[in-house]
Amino acid sequence: MDKLLIQGGNRLAGEISISGAKNAALPILCAGLLTADTVQLSNVPHLQDVATMLKLLRQMGLRVEQEGNTVALNGRAVDKLEAPYEMVKTMRAAILVLGPLVARFGEAKVSLPGGCAIGSRPVDQHIKGLQAMGAEITIEAGYIHAKAKRLKGTRVVTDMITVTGTENLLMAATLADGETVLENAAREPEVADLANLLVAMGARIDGIGSDRLVVQGVEQLHGASHAVISDRIETGTFLCAVAAAGGDVTLKNARTNILDVALDKLREAGVIITSGDNWIRVQMAARPKAVTFRTTEYPGFPTDMQAQFMALNSIAEGGSRVTETIFENRFMHVQELNRLGASIGIEGHTAIIQGVDKLVGAPVMATDLRASASLVIAALAAQGETLIDRIYHLDRGYDRMEEKLSAVGADIRRVK
Ligand code: EPU
Image (cartoon, rainbow, N blue to C red; front, side, top):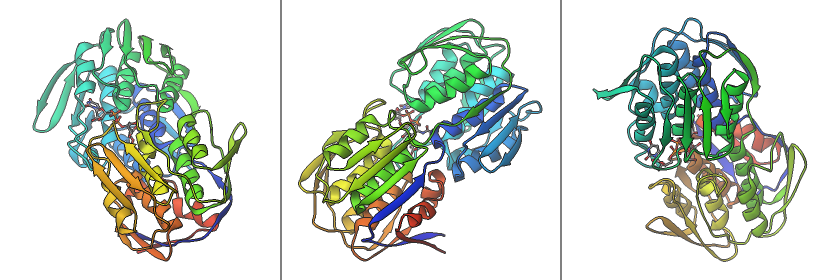
């Protein structure tokens, strides 16, 4: 199993190019199931989760041609309408094939994902929405079986805001009979990116970027080309890395307008941020100041940045409180950060952090994707050597992170 060996203390300087967004690429790849034509994608990141999704889609009969960061999908020969447990258990986003399959083929069999390291994460809202659209759904032997002659447009109000739930129902609605209104829809930029591709494929969607998506179903969708938006969480992760380690780095292919709250928090922490259309420059020369926040749905503070900011708060001047409101168990990194010398306690859904002067390197264990990123950030700022085990979590969602960091001066190396 690969590990990361990081010698902390280096200042970071130079340029990093941001990849396409994981959480946009995954639903977008599933949209390839909605048409018999070719969907041509660019800016697709090199990630384990993308590889897993492509493997699943190939198993279903989707033709996939991949070259560098481009992927061409052709759904003419899709004939296996199933996502098996082996796939869904390694990547929950596989649930995103459910909506497209029922919509285009009238049938799907998708394994229930089960729990994961950050919480129980049920998919009841995906099911509720499809049922409202007329799908007959049974759960048997751990699988969701969905059937519908043709889905029918309707009004769906989800109990809570769900990102992949909105994406699944949105894809389903594009081919439904009549109008579907998705109320309480997720406003994440990744949902909007998917919606923009669907429109390019002939879908009729109003309200993109809002919490009310109105979809007029069409008989069929056609091929299209689309570039995946840049990854705001990867961007935020590198910003935190520079804020923690100190330095001067310009992030290219990065967008500021989808990261507002996190950027405000970094400024509050004393980080200097300047930006243009597709770049962000981050400069940090002092010790960061502690920042208090609570995670909420977009456009609030993203739960996917919580762990990275916690690493920053660990070495900040002063105390802070971080409240997680999206997932019930997303504090697995706390124990590991404390192993590096951080002073963090947990009270319910709030972590209470007292900034320390320095962290000291130690062997630590990655528990999930963003927790791994927080350990990398902490290790870059720590004195001495940190060995991070189980970095397959990191490979799921970051495109060559250690290469990008070593190019700006970090002492980071992958060991077998
Ligand atoms: N929820 C339900 N029932 C549902 C759906 C969601 O109870 O049917 C709950 C969840 O358990 C959670 C909350 O609603 O407590 C929000 O979950 P959501 O459905 O929005 O999360 P998701 O769609 O499974 C996506 C991202 C996550 C990100 C969350 C929140 C993808 C592939 N994944 O997950 O990304 O944290 O939205 O923004 O888009 C990551 O990249 O590290 C990651 C975990």
